[in-house]
Image (cartoon, rainbow, N blue to C red; front, side, top):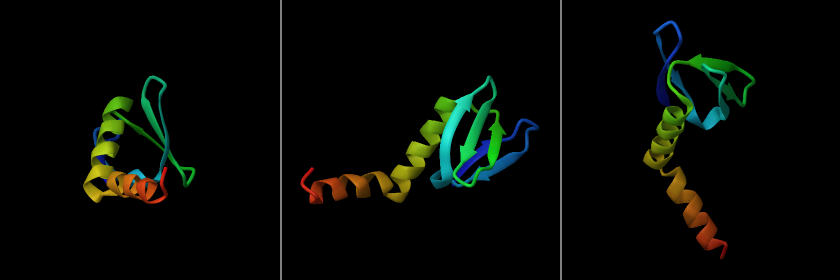
Length: 73
């Protein structure tokens, strides 16, 4: 989960695993795999950085690398 800020200044916690797309229009719009959209104050590059850090923290990045190594890719 990553902590972001809605346009009204209220914090929102987002499940990073459900993020499908992030776009700036000029506000940052996050589309989830559930079909829900969330607009936040943080820029897209900040959201991407938070997602990367979260994925590293839970070991998702390492697990996918290990999986590729095991498959001989």
